[in-house]
Amino acid sequence: MKTHKIAVIAGDGIGKEVMPEGLRALEATAKRFGIGLEFTNFEWADCDYYLQHGKMMPDDWKEQLSGFEAIYFGAVGWPDKVPDHISLWGSLLKFRREFDQYVNLRPVRLMPGVPCPLANKKPGDIDFYVVRENTEGEYSSVGGRMFEGTERELVLQEAVFTRHGTDRILKYAFDLAQRRPKKHLTAATKSNGIAISMPYWDERVAAMGEQYGDVKWDKYHVDILAARFVLSPERFDVVVASNLFGDILSDLGPACAGTIGIAPSANLNPDRTFPSLFEPVHGSAPDIYGRNIANPIAMIWSGAMMFEFLGQGDANYTAAHDAIVRAMETCLTEGPRTPDMGGTASTTEVGEAIAGYLRTQA
Ligand code: NAD
Ligand code: IPM
Ligand code: MN
Image (cartoon, rainbow, N blue to C red):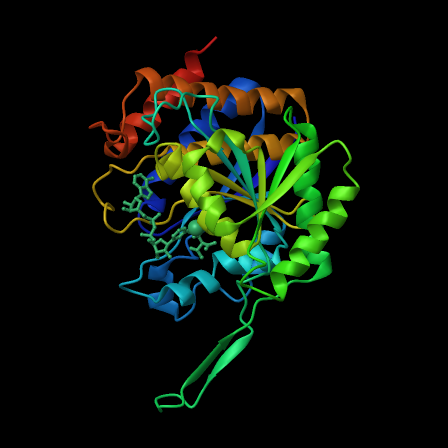
């Protein structure tokens, strides 16, 4: 039996509360499917480490993590202790960029049992992926400040779009669309207002689209695309977007499908040169931390995505992924619920219920 080496980083806030439930589900699944997982816990990449050491991670973080196949990650950020741009650029954004995790894959699905804020929607009506570019675009450290503190103060922040970076995310998204029954792709743009990078993005989408004759594709400016997520989510299948637009759409999508407390994500280095990273879409939620009421399902679902990645198409790993999704669905329809879904259950109760279904389900 092959053993997969997984680095575990809980991070800040509710990252620390949902991580044990994620691990509980992973362990139950690994046991049932005879898959070897070896976890190594890292007590850095969080704001307490920063307060002690003046940096988010040790200098050799990259060497320490490079030998792992995957990183299972909670959430980072505690803005009252450390400014967000320091904590995030010192940890998560470093992983994404230096481990070249250029795909951020974020499923948006209305699950059975989840109250939907949109009228008359049932499971199946909302079922798409946001494919977010994860290493460049609007997230850049290119720029600067001048004349600070004066009337002439000037701040510049550049966006970076390379052909390599743009084409590889579009190719991933078109490949994904091609494997899905609807074979449909939507590109988010804003070429009316952002007059240099977005027309370029549109050109590359069109060029890539020509290579996928069987995929129907369209594009929308991101403002109306956001409105269409709310008004007609059933029309989406694969939505590809630049880093910032993908970030916004991947909170909006899950909110339309009920709660961001269940939304997972996979930060993929498809070449497998570096570890990939699996984490909830949500953050450290300081407003609810310490009460054991965070929904652990996003963390658990991210673990399911990790099995699929580790298996590289192996049917046993796909079955492990599917078992976790079924256990989540059972919990969402008949099990305990955390307050974000209208329930009164704790994080631990939901995590224990899902691990229980995983042990006993047919
Ligand atoms: P957030 O996602 O942490 O919280 C937004 C709202 O959603 C809060 O009201 C919170 O209580 C609720 N929420 C989030 N996850 C939940 C869950 N599992 N169950 C129930 N409710 C949940 O976003 P924010 O408030 O903008 O950010 C808080 C901190 O987290 C900041 O430091 C931010 O930079 C950071 N952050 C980190 C990540 C990450 O590590 N991937 C992602 C987003 C935000
Ligand atoms: C996410 C988060 C991060 C992002 C933040 C915390 C830097 O919002 O993973 O969606 O913007 O990518
Ligand atoms: Mn986000």
